[in-house]
Image (cartoon, rainbow, N blue to C red; front, side):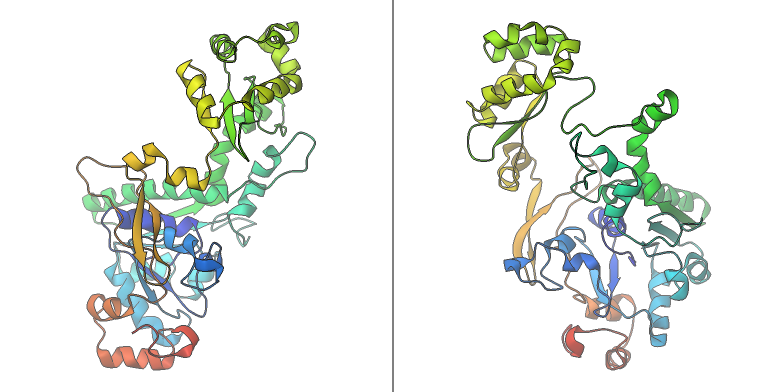
Length: 403
């Protein structure tokens, strides 16, 4: 049962769902998951069930609408926790205690429950009440300091970086807890601070400061050990290619690919040290050469010569990428409101364990009837009472919206 919120928490249960678990996502029309409000929306029309962000991160799940703040919801909570092997949440510390759904409360109902909690800064400490999303962790973890041009202000990382690091640590911990329970019968509480998960990806920079006293500076697309290293303009509108030359053998191959022009024999580019010292001029020459070729041509020429290079792909490029197509990475699924659109398949495959996506992320309350009646065992009369009392929430207060 998934009580989690936004992006980091729901990805954990999504991965379990894509590998065979039955996952019930719990939300309320009074307080829906914020991902439902994030663009892009179908036809650019906002709506709780029109957002691609939410549906992409909740594939294969069931969804019920339930107002957890109602006293009459206690029996629903009890049956959900009793039914579940795993339950998870990603709320601000203290929220689940107030709802009667913290680990100690759930353990009384189901002693074998595996309960995970993932929050911004953790469940204890002087900053435990910090509220935010992954973009705030970008700043706290230093990623914004590292990102940008040398003379620019700190730059917001494109996405909520830690939201796509923390779930995989948590998933591994849950699998370990499941194996332990199989041997011992005992459940487990797993608590995670997303800041700490994200910080592991800044380890080299932190160690460099600790050992050498060198703080990391913003350097755009450049690398401390490679030159040329950057994103260069190719032929065509807004087409770009990434090139990274990491050693003298690659530099010799790079020179051969671009035809050993006169400028490349300049003493300013004779050694790696010289190239780093004159990187602005080097990038200007490389960019001018790249403008004469399509990005795909440059990638092919460089790779065939042993020089790392790649096209800077757009979303359209990705959807038409032949390698992703061969591996069936993008799958089309039907959503009850959005219609048919593409989803990411599981990122890895097992030889002996099924893993797949077969269901779009659900509309809010889409599975009320199935879950309340068939899984939790409520009668039609009990369900009708909960609808009338607002325990089972509906859009705009309509008692028939989800049925």
